[in-house]
Length: 147
Image (cartoon, rainbow, N blue to C red; front, side, top):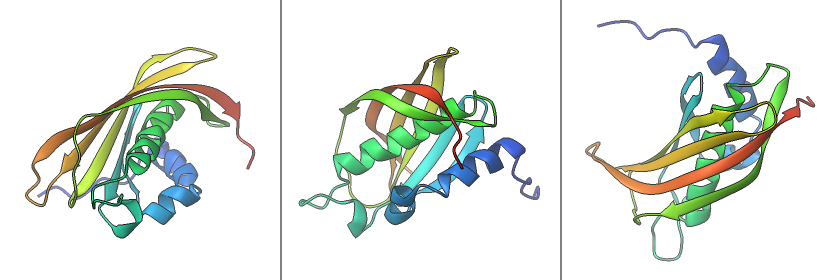
């Protein structure tokens, strides 16, 4: 069995910003994977992320998708730069409870002034079965890093 590889410089740069996200920390989200133009974030099912009927709340799904797409975009800008969301549109495909959500953000186009990302949100049940949960398209802009 291969030993896990050390985190890349890109992963560490994104992780440093991700750990400053108070909302993501409160919800229990974790950074799973970072590659150029791609970011995957997980959100486990808990009382912090449910709506009144016990399923994942759409706001939690939207926040998770926003983070995954934004950090996918951030992998395509200079290290002294971050990004901020200008807009996004999300389609909820199905409701789920239990397990966890995985949001996988991918850069569709990276320009100098705007970056467009797409995000697929999947539900993973206790057996690892994946089901489509939501799709999002997002526009972000580069901004100076202020910390």
